[in-house]
Image (cartoon, rainbow, N blue to C red):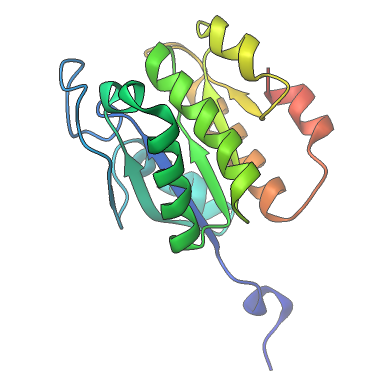
Length: 183
């Protein structure tokens, strides 16, 4: 007979990156086509120990160049949502976008759309430097605060990302948690 811990399934996570965070391009490779890998890439690799703590695994990393996204945000978001549905993720983490403005915009939009059109739960992660995106999406989607790229507090931010993922996966009310770790 299985224990309750054994009967629970491991949380399945999808992470969404731009060309830089995916490790597949530079700031100049903005037209990287939409794609995905069924393995950890980019920040998912550094987050592996944190995911292990919450009994989660990355089932895929999806990515898109900032220019590809900006050329047709509706279509890119629709396709990302379709990929999320196909992969049946429990939680989708859009980011961390740090202080990358175009990437932050994609993260917030896609997280909102995933929540509206799929059975998965999604949130974004970015730094306070993304003022316009925060102003536009703050009430529409949870946005976990991170430092800017190279800033202090990254370990705490990664733990907060995992806390939000775990709460969403468990169906917990996230209002109080959001007050502590989100914008």
